[in-house]
Length: 141
Image 1 (cartoon, rainbow, N blue to C red):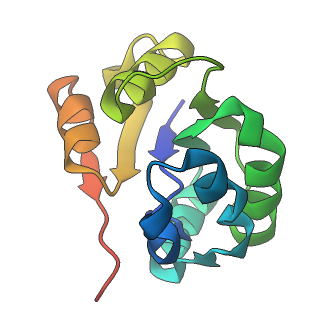
Image 2 (image 1 turned 30 degrees about the vertical axis):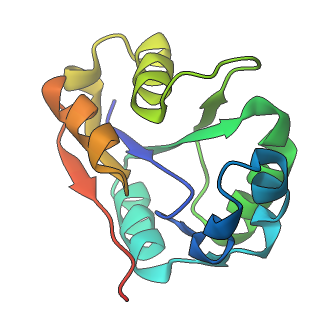
């Protein structure tokens, strides 16, 4: 099994326009349906999917936003094997919650996950320490 873990906000979804709402998490997440896709990253995810990788979207968005997130992904991105989200009531930092969710589904990350794509350096560093190849994404200015 070859799994590609792919973040959502700022990786496949251009969330920069709503970053002024960071901290007001319900408003921030409620507006995600208006995000534009980041097409170069989505093209890479599509190529990996066509090449036989299972795409798993991994986001720190709370579970209560699952339906809206799935709808946006279905409209804009390659099909997902899974969508891993922040569990209800979890307030851990993004690197902690993302790593724990990934390990819950793939205990031996190094042998299953071929690539993690995420915009956050702290998340990329956490997965790199686990032996996972990472690609830190950045939207061109």
